Image 1 (cartoon, helix red, strand yellow):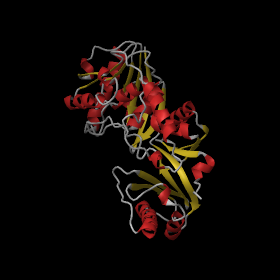
Image 2 (cartoon, rainbow, N blue to C red):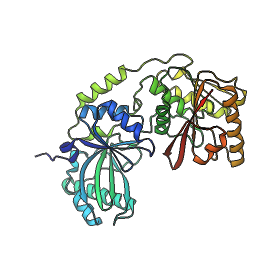
Image 3 (cartoon, helix red, strand yellow):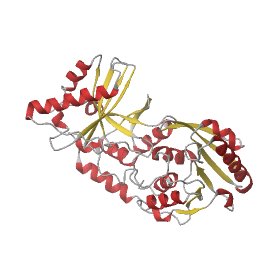
Image 4 (tube, rainbow, N blue to C red):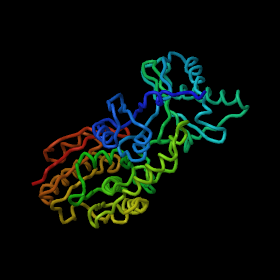
Length: 382
């Protein structure tokens, strides 16, 4: 008789996201029809049927991973981890021709080394195949068919299948990049928090490689976040229903809309950044309608009735604190003097920099991403 796994018994799943974007993620889950949505450590627990689950993995802009738990158990030693992992029939998820990889998070537990914990789980899987068939499946850390997640917290372990088959922030449109690019899920959270829905133009005066512009386009035109993705982890689930997945994908793709000319624009002083934007926007439907030009923000004529969403260069891209301070002060003056009737949403990778703009924010939202303790500030410009 086929084994029944935890996600099948409960319909419960876990979504990982960046700290500060929990409300965005939970709102997104409600829109997709998920139930029993509850915040957890570094993510959100929720309940969904297979159709809703496929939709979440294909369309979510905010979550970096969606995990289907196979088994949860007390785990006080390496030996017990190895033994318990053997209770899973890995042939339900893998064949000898398919590859796999494991991501691991370990905290406050007897097993302290995440790399070592991943090695034990890998050995358990490989040994099971070897005993049954005399052969073993291969590991491919770059592009696996099956990606597993092992999470051990306070000696409680959870083994899950990563349903996206890798981090969902990798949309597939980033063909070229600048130094220290913004993560796509962070950019999506910023666009969502801005409340911009295409009712007026959007401009990014420090557009870099165009991540904020591309995420604004995807949100406005309803392009599924995983539109360019080739591999999905849920394809490896024993109860995967190809008909349901095809219906979800077909319906989502049919809902892609058009972008009004001139609605999304960007500028940057760096010619390399603009070259990157042009390469990246070309990968997306309607991407050619994102307009960009090379310009220092000070040479722009200014804006009226526009939503400004931007992440000014600092530290990494600018190279020094004094330069950053001067640039932010000048940008603050530009917003005050040349952007009447606009709303500006400025993300600072370092929260301390918000004071340098010289404007009082209407609200502030801490957003952590890629090791940065950043903050998003909203400014109403009258």
